[in-house]
Image (cartoon, rainbow, N blue to C red; front, top):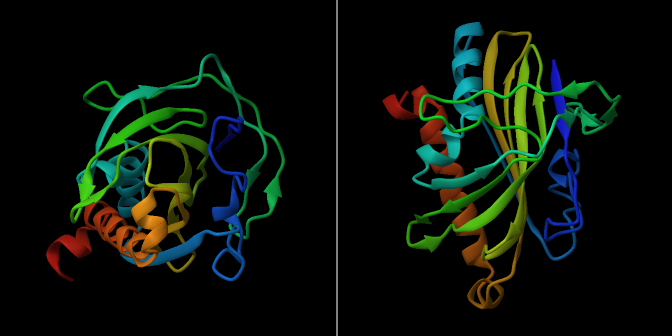
Length: 216
């Protein structure tokens, strides 16, 4: 089991970890627009493991058409500190996390403290920004991470990605987010924030779900 948190003053919002809160949709951070979606993407251990590997190798973002550059893991061994359970409650610290995995292109896998630069557009809307992995979890039936904005984005906030394999053998992909518009156009026209988020969610689903790809 792996859990990691990495929180610094370099993220550009205050409510770090709020995507783990069970009442996010009812009580989002101030001036933020919340969003969440959950999709069934198959069943069984093989589906869980393949989806989890895709997620941790940045598959959701890349598959949504976003380019990931300047991947900078946290310097030195990471302390696996306080994480969160499925209900958003904090769990006990774990251990030092020193190992690092890489994909076929040599890009480091998701790990707490990693900073990335994302570039791209979704249906004509800007998706550029610098992001930091503020938490990461790898458990027997639950894998995921949360990304927080550092700067350079049209919104400020956080998004979390989770693959869950429940006791009924169902595998689900869950994405939650909150966005506070920072660019002038998005502050002027708040519906653009929801539209941008909706398009990002659909891109993530296309990337992770074989059911979506086949139209099932």
